[in-house]
Length: 86
Image (cartoon, rainbow, N blue to C red; front, side):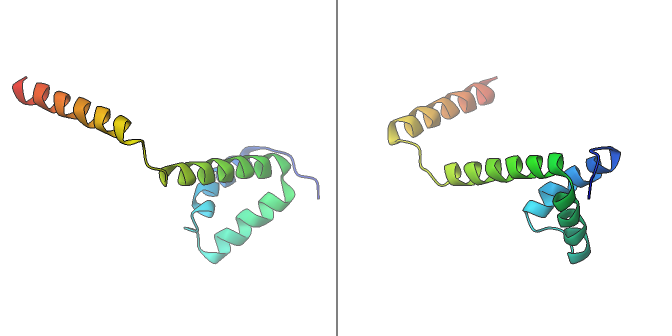
């Protein structure tokens, strides 16, 4: 079925984030999935958002090197002191 990327796509694009996080009820999930099956531009955006979400999730599991963590903590302490003194 041919589908033009238009105004109704905006509604689906907003729901894609909830779709990715499994935060939609069954009826909404089915509607979003049908739309993605029919709309290439929305499917591309969905794939991009899913990839970004996966990369961010993976990078959040990595731990910063200890030297970097110490520098960041030092800067946080310096800001806290400036705020307290300010």
